[in-house]
Length: 415
Length: 90
Image (tube, rainbow over all chains, first blue to last red; front, side, top):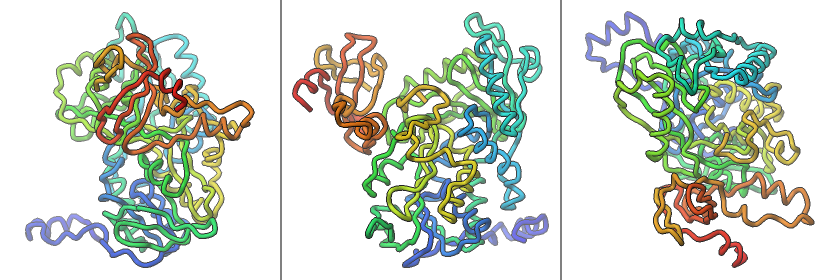
């Protein structure tokens, strides 16, 4: 056993010099059966590929370090409160995997099911959320409609009597919540490593090797690596990476900012989202208020945003809970999102045999990590889409089967 | 970000709404069929680096601009009136 009370006590006496890294740092081999590009969703994929689907000779390549991509640039919210049949069963699978995740990989990911409340401000919105709640129940998720008084019991600090946006109630999912984002990828990485997966960091893919329409390997900054099957899960950079394989995607890359306040005493019970603007907030176990809003709205690979969006998010926060104005902002960051043309992800094969794509997660990649990894591993192992992800096809745009939750059409910055 | 409007000078990007890749100016001919329109509507180059894109001066003179911008640094390299670009057959 690596961790125990006894071990902690013994290490305390030895100045904590005996702890070992969680995973090996191997040199890349010449050839693998499965090469997975991207150490976020890709790490979850490698984990399930090795543990659940019993595959071997697997490598995960990451251009930076594990935990340095979007897994370290999110607001840690987990939930399955979607509407459409192509999405909701998939996210509910993810929610179920979250619930068993810590037992599964024996690592404390601090999964905390403290609930999410989507606030209702108009009668029309209540109808919409009632419909959404019913769709969630039909997919096996939990949902309940709260009255204004029930919301007030849980979150008395909200601005209920805002003249423009009075709070009329909320849609609640009790099983939603937050998780410790780094620990999720560390847990997957350790589990994958123990199952024999090579985790190769600082290894950027610079090209694909394709012979007769079949992928045979990847070129990287650490040399050529042969591969029978290549899975690409490089959120934010999907367009760039797949361009090396000669593909254009239904994706634009956008920057999404998020913010953390100084540490405060426990004040926000779960995740709360403003229904009259785009603003969502939760409180981390450390006490910081973690919140965000809209993407900046223009194509970007910069991992940092601009001030107008900061102002917009802050306005949303002030309209929802004026007390937030007393908190000081500690830090903010920007992550690059694959904004797809219908706001929903893609887990599918490509026109090149042996090359698979996992992309287009928009804002929602973090909560999807377990199911994304599971379904992608299923696809890589069997060549067939997983039952819950069968709507997330790359050709759905050409066939007219888009999964457009927002109903905004082919305009990525509106999803 | 400040956009150098060809007629109005430097304007705050907040006055504009963003549409996307300037290739949207080149709508395919209806005779080219469904596949061409599918590519036009859904697929993008999405480059990391210099990107030509459509911005609409909604809070200003309501002109469409083609702005050339670096998506890695957010540096704006130039702006032209979309009608001039379209007129020149680009």
